[in-house]
Image (tube, rainbow, N blue to C red; front, side, top):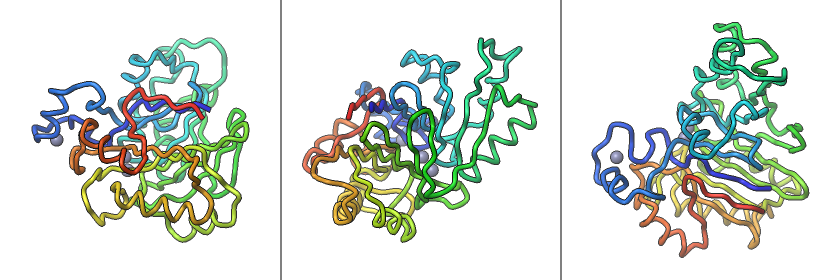
Length: 278
Ligand SMILES: [Zn+2]
Ligand SMILES: [Zn+2]
Ligand SMILES: [Zn+2]
C-alpha cells in the first residue's frame, strides 16, 4: 500500500488563512515543506481520506482526476476534513460531465453523515452521483478491496470523530487524525485484536509544545502514547511512525524546525506531497 499526504495542516493551514504570526510569515519566506494545506490523504491513488476545501487544489497539484475517485473515508465533520458543499459539484449534468454511472461513496460517522446527507437532499443529487454510508464503529467493512475499521477518536464529540485502520495484502495503515490518546473502548478493541500496524499516522497538532489539551497531541504525548500502543502489540519497532496534522500554534511548527526534533524520536514528519510505500 502507498499513502500520499495531500494536505498536512490543521484547520487554519500553514500559513494560516488570515494570519501574520511569526510562524506563518516564516513559512511564506521559507516555502517548500513549510507550506501546509488542509488535511487529506490518498491510499494507492484511489482511496481518498477526508474531503476538505483544499481538495480541489490538491487534485490540480497532484494530477488526481476526482471523477475517478470512487471512495472517500471521512474522519470527522470539522471543516479541515469535510467541506460538504463541494460535494454539490459531483452532481452530473450541469456541474460534472462524467461517463459511467458509478458514484463516489462517502463513509462517515453521524455528524459528517448528516452534513453530506443534507447536501444530497438540498441539491437532489442522484445515488448514481453520490452515495453515502454510515460507518459502524469496530465493525470491519470492505471498500474496493480494503478492509476498513473505524474506531472512536478522542476529539470534539460533536464532530463524530473516528480513526481508521486500513488493511490490504497483509499490510495495515492506521490513520489517526484528529485525536488525542484513545478512550478505553478503542484501547480495549485494540487489545483484543491482533492488529499490528505497518504505518501509524498520528496527530501532532501541537508540535513540540507541551500541552495537556484533549483532542490533539504533541510529540511528547505521541511518544508516550506510542509506548502504550507498543505494549499491546499494535505498534512494533518495524512500524513507520509519521507525525501529521500541524498547526501554526504548535511548538516548532515549521517543518524545518520540527523535523530535527522528530528525528531524535525516530519519527517521520509529513509534508504536503509526501509518499510512503509499505
Ligand atoms: Zn483537523
Ligand atoms: Zn499564524
Ligand atoms: Zn478536528
